[in-house]
Length: 261
Image (cartoon, rainbow, N blue to C red):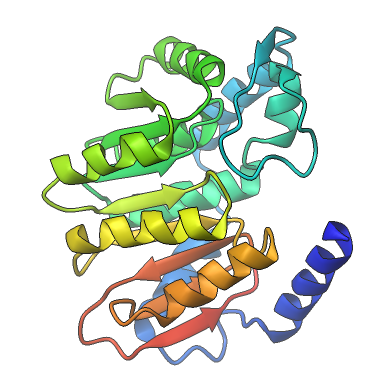
C-alpha cells in the first residue's frame, strides 16, 4: 500500500512540478538555477562519500532504538551498521543538495533532528564551517557510531545530543538567540513534525530556513506539510518531493513552489 501511494504521489509531483523555467520569483529562480541545479563536482563530495563507503563496509551490529515512525525497509532492533548505511542514510544526490543549500545560506547555527550515522551532519558542517552544529539522535548506539565518525573526521564543531527530541530540542532552541537552519529528519509523524515546527517559530527570522525530510512519507506527513505551508509566518515554500524548504522572508508574496529534482 505504501509503495502504491508513494508512487502515485511521485508521479503527480513530477507531472505538476516546474524546473527553473517559468518561475516568476527572482529569489526562487536563483535558488533553483544556481544552487539546486548545480551539478558541478566538489572536492567535499569525494571526502564525505569516502566516509559513507567505510560505513557501508562496517559489519558491526548495534541495537537501534526507534522513537519515531520507524522504517519502511527494516524495523529490526538489531542492525548492522552497513545495513543502516545502505538504507537509512540520505543518498549522495540528496545529501549533496543539502550541502549546497546550506553553503548558500551560510547559517551561524544548524540544528539537525536525526543524526543517524552522521554523514549528512558532516555535509552540513562542511557547508558552513563557522556554524555551530547541534545534531540530535534518539538511539544511543547509533549516536555512538556517529560520534566515532565525527572524531575520525576531525570535526570539533559538532555537538551531538542523545535522547528523545521532545526532551532535547527545547533546550537547544531556548539556548539560541535565533534559529538559522533546522533540518528535520526524524520521527516522521504528523503531530511531532508540527510540534518541532512550532517550537522554532519564536526564534525564526528573515533568513531562517527550515528543511523537512520525507514530506510524502505518509498521509500524516503530507498533512503536516500542508499545515506548515499554510502557516501565516511562512512566506515561501519549495517542495522538492524528497524534502520541503520553508522560508520566512518578510515582504515576500506568499507562494508555494513545486520544483522537479
